[in-house]
Image (cartoon, rainbow, N blue to C red):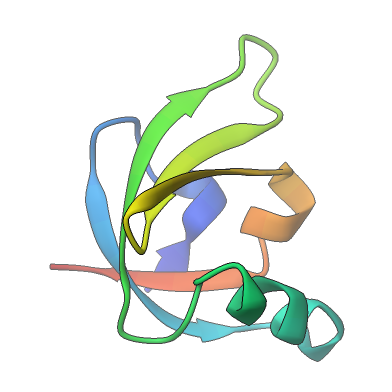
Length: 74
């Protein structure tokens, strides 16, 4: 398992769990739920934020938010 912030551009992974419960509700409201497939679309030139495709739409996350999402390969 690794963090979403460590996934390379173009790779698709599955959300496994969240590390920080404080941000858990916010991420779930945005479609980031365990079992959902996520594809990293783009990373900003300085590495923050990242753009992901989840639940049929694009979402931008800050690196500290992506650090709290634990993912696994398909």
